[in-house]
Image 1 (cartoon, one colour):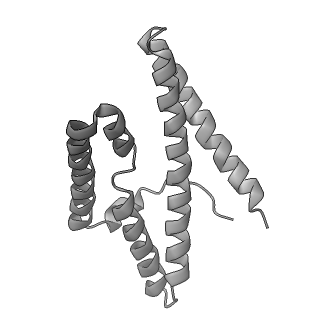
Image 2 (image 1 turned 120 degrees about the vertical axis):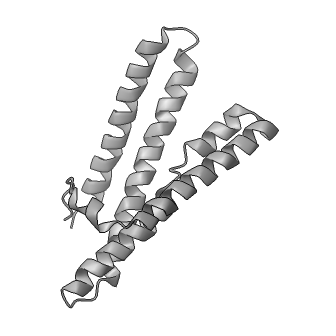
Image 3 (image 1 turned 180 degrees about the vertical axis):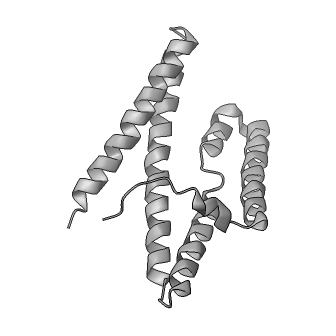
Length: 143
């Protein structure tokens, strides 16, 4: 079982060039979305901005860091690294589905209701959706 927690020590493990890779990935996704907006409009481009722009870089870096941690202890960390990257991917997918719920809520309700109320409600819907998916996934794969 994997326990979800915040571990700020990971910030020290990340080298400056790894942050640069994440920044570049984010910039590229944003630039591509801008080009798509010019060609097909903001609705289509917005779908690409919803893509976790730094996910490809962070997943590979997460795998690398997990592997290095295990190798420092004299163990093979390949499987642990892959498992950590897979868990990160699953979390990104659940969060993205939550973002779709957020976007649909805003799209349907902002024309009719005050934007501030809709944004708060949409944020709660995102939270509910993502957490519900996480709970369902956890219950489904319980040993």
